[in-house]
Image 1: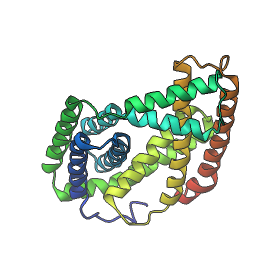
Image 2 (image 1 turned 60 degrees about the vertical axis):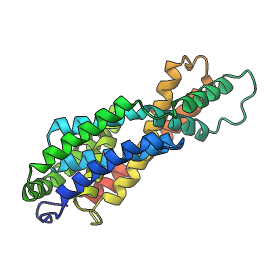
Image 3 (image 1 turned 60 degrees about the horizontal axis):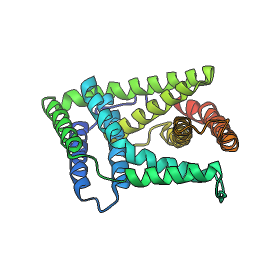
Image 4 (image 1 turned 30 degrees about the vertical axis):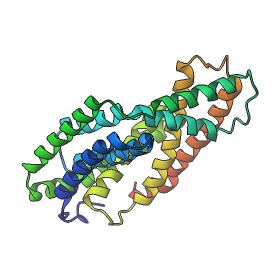
Length: 269
């Protein structure tokens, strides 16, 4: 979406405030989550990522973005533990024989996921709700016209940033560059969902595909970091690492193909 194609967007200020209020409500609901903490935190974090993208697109200050990011990180433990188990199962290790390193890894992952499935401390919920209140206060003093005008520029700015990071990832093919691509894709898509909900934007469908693929990459990298942190190195769990690296290489090739053949052409390079 170029600057010539954009018009003033109706309602981004109201949408951002509504997202903050919904996050506050979801945080309060963690007190009565009926054992579904990981699922509810997942919804909270998804909404938080969209909100961060919308705030960035509408030119909100960095403190607001940091507050939302901190909320996601504080709440991330239970969800990350659940994702690690899912990622491990997707590696298809099969029925691990008793006494095997695979059995030990699977048992530890299941134990940590079970232990992490508890609601966060009340102090974390209180701080998060207070931070969201601060974001709402900052949005309240800005006018609809100001935020809409910033959004017009923000759509172009975040798309330009995304395009730059995509090209850098193709040039250097480093893990950190693909991680930055994932953040840029999430910010752009999240911002669009807040600013122009329901509007078809060139490249959005392709960006969604890339975001899903980069999410798989990230899940594998998180599992790899966990394995290393627990002492399951390639020397002690060689077969596991061989399978994991093979899956990573396959997904990375798919990411490169999606960027080169689909997303960049859709964005007009």
